[in-house]
Image (cartoon, rainbow, N blue to C red; front, side, top):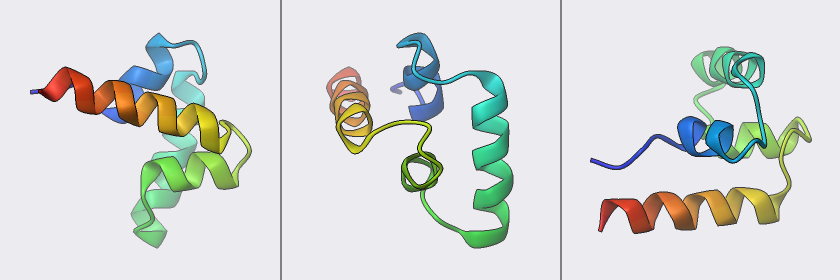
Length: 61
């Protein structure tokens, strides 16, 4: 199984554990996707999110 998005972003140095925790709290109450929350909070850019998702998808194959 591939890595979770949060793990990929942390390993890439784009976010830290506090960022993940904040986004996960928001996710619990809103049901939004984690990446969408991180972009909306300006923690990562849309481009950084796409690169992380591409990497995540490659590691699954």
